[in-house]
Every structure is written in structure tokens, then in C-alpha cells.
Image (cartoon, rainbow, N blue to C red; front, side, top):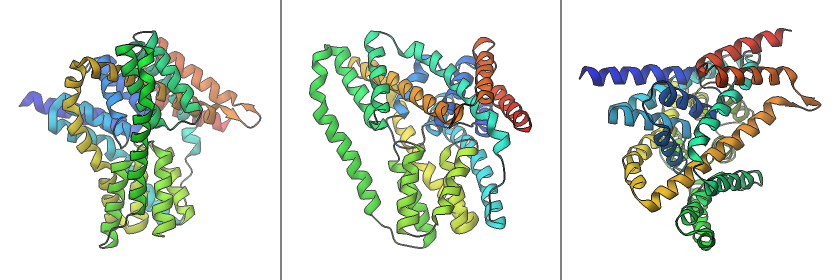
Length: 389
């Protein structure tokens, strides 16, 4: 019993910390988790961690939150699942809720840009380190390398990320089992899966629910959490159509402010729901919206996690997981490049200060293995100083 309590305490301490310093989006969060639970604490092997990353990309919901829930389940079963997930979400929800109160009370967002100038550059180094370490494990042969490169190219050619992931996984499974010629026939069924997903999303957008506004708010975010593939940009589309255009509960400016809050606060980006819930219906609205958007992730992980060892035991599904894992690394690579473009490039060239912070952070994290928390906090301090110069 004491051992179980100690494990829960360790999970709570770790994921509260990650929730407080987790800037930079899902790729950065997963990189920080890999550093903590694989490299430092050795709770999971790299192979197991990769399987969880790959599996998480197959289900709707926020990837990094689901990774926290996965780790909690592996470490301490059902109680760990709840503790890890709640502790990772809670700091972001509280911070976002506090900012929502400031926003409603004073009509504007606080000025935080100087504090996050260096954080964004430091996050690039954390992601680069995780991509390198996990990539070495994921790329087991030349076929998997080619699958990963194909997924990267597909995403840069504007192929849907979820579609690219499934395409890499299924075609990779057949290629690894039978050779290159066998994979071509899968385009038709995969197109069907993509269309099925699109139909579910379309049905969600057209449906409406009755009841009080608070129930409507909760059910709206519950549906979003249940079908949300593709991350923050897809979330914005749902919010725009559902809350601004259809229900008229938010103005366009309020939506933009909510998205901004989600971008510069730590933890899961979906804590945007907390901000919106508070703006619409105060503290009850913030609670209902937060629970609604994150609750499906706990159910999805609880169903999926026990199945992963069985999937790995099957030759076919092991090949599928290998291909999915390398495709997930490809998604992290594309996320890193997109972040780098937004952080390091200015209209008239490269932001030299941001580039220096990123290079310095990369040297510290790769050469001297400084942990992610130190890199993020150091980046914040350096960025604030640079903004004063």
C-alpha cells in the first residue's frame, strides 16, 4: 500500500511540474515526458514509450494529455491514470481560469510576451532532442525511414495529419509484411476510413442539443473532445463554427483572445475551453467546459492501453505499430519545423536573438543533458533579459 501511495505521489509531483512548465504544444510536452519518464526515471523503455506515442495519435483528443494518462496507467493502473491526467491538466486550467477572470474583469489580456520570448526558442531544443532520441529507436530499418520521410513530405504537401498517420501505418504494415507491391491496394479502404471520419465530424457540426445553456456548453465540449483529431487548428474551426457562427455565445474577438491564451499558457492547448467556459458562464461554465473536453481522453486511454501489449505480440500489428511510431516521429518533425518558422523567421530575415537562444539550449540539452524544466525556465529568463536590451 505504501509503495502504491509513493507511486501516486511521484506521478502527481511529476505531472504537476510538467503542467506548469509545459510550453510549446503537444510535441514539446511529449519531448519533456520522454526526458522524465524514459531517460531519467526509467519508468518505461523507449520502445514502450514509442508504442504509446503511436497509439495516442490513433485516437481523438489532446495527444500530450493522453500520453500523461497512458504513463499514469502503466505506472499505477486506474488510480495512476486519474492522478497523472488530472495533475497535468490542473495547472493549465487554473492559470487559464485566472486569466479569464482578469479578462472579464478588466476587458483585456495581461502583457506576457517578454516572458515567453525565450521559452519558445528553448522549446525547439527540447523537441529536437526528443526527435533524435526517439527517432533512433523508431527507425529500425530503411523501409521505416522511407515511411517516415514519406509522411513528412505528405504533411508539407498539405495532406491531413491524421490521414497521413493512418496511411503510414497501414501501408507500412503491408510493406513490412509482404514487400512494396502489396501496399498499393490499400488506398481505397483508407480513403473510406478518411471519409467515415469526415462524416462523423460533419454530423457533429450539424447536430444540436437541448437543455440549459450550461448543459449545452458541457455537451458541446464533450463532443469536441470525442471527435477532435488534428490538434489546435481543428479546435479553432470547431469553436468558430459552433460558438461564434451558430450559437453566438462568443464574439470573433473573444475567440481570438481565447486562442491567444491557449498559445502562451503552459500545459494542454485545450485549456482554451476553460477560458471560453468562464467567459460564457463564469466558474460553473469553466468547470463544465474543462471536464467536457478532457473526459473522453480518459475513456479512450483506458480502453486502448491494455490492448497495446496484445497488438505488439501480433506480427501484423507489430508491423503496424512500428510504422505508426515512425509516422508519429514524422509528425513531431513537421511540428518542429513549423514552430521554427514561426519563432526564428522575421519578415526581413532570421531573428538572431531567438536563434542564439535555440542553439544554446540545444547544446545544453544534447551535450550536457540538462532537463527540460531547466531549459524552459532558463529560456524564459534569457528571453526576458534579451527583450530589455
